[in-house]
Image 1 (cartoon, rainbow, N blue to C red):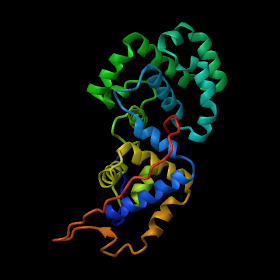
Image 2 (image 1 turned 60 degrees about the horizontal axis):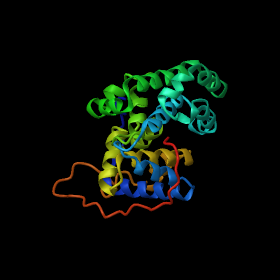
Image 3 (image 1 turned 90 degrees about the vertical axis):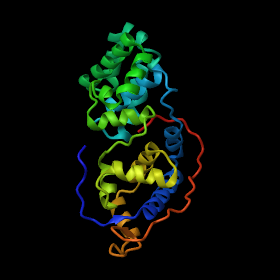
Image 4 (image 1 turned 30 degrees about the vertical axis):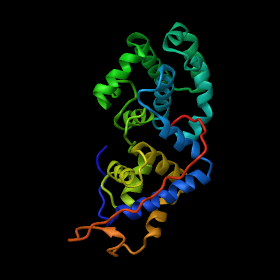
Amino acid sequence: MPASKTNRPRLNPVLLASHYMTAKERVIDAGFAGEIDWQASISFDAWDERTFLRESAWVVLSAGFRESVLRGRFCDVSAAFLDWVNADSIIAHRKRCRSNALSAFRNPMKIDAILHIVKRVATESIEVIREQIRSRGIEFIRELPFMGAVSSLHLAKNLGLPVSKPDRHLNRFAEAAGYSSSKEMCELIAKTVGDTVSVVDVVIWRYATLTPNYEMALRAAYPHVRGRTLWSGPRRGVEHQPPVIMSVGAQNQPVIGR
């Protein structure tokens, strides 16, 4: 994903982090604390075969599809694939699984892509798949069907790798804040507040879905764009010391990742 181009002044790290924490509170108050907790709890070494199959399928189906609509269909897709019990069982009932899945999600290319991933797990084992991702990272994930530049990062994030998904919401948020890429912005926020990059991704993405005018809200929060205290730039002899910003707690609600 190429870096976004922006000529806007860059919001300094302290105020960017402050706006992030406000966004995080908004997300929690709206009832999505479980998404944050789910992302924070993911460990790359802890997921099993069922988790890998489920998250891979979610990412394949998510490509070009609205999350809110997919969430309503995904239970039926999961049931069609035997609730992702294991790759061997799905392959053993491949025809039935495919037929049932197409009844829930009528896109043969995506359903076949999921079956391709399932077959690869059945053939190579989940342990080999994990080690391939550990050693090769995004390069390996992109070998899987429907895993492009953005989707591969989506799956990597949902498997516990410290990355963000540069989708349109994150890119627009970064541009509004004056940053050249969402990756740069997410990493800076993570360093300032102590959340992981993946959690920062989830918070900003969910906040954007809850706040249609989030770009305007970000700019309106700090209207004096020429003020030296609000926007960072080359300044000699001045070092910004970020304040201690505590993460907001939340109740644990198991969910599938975005």
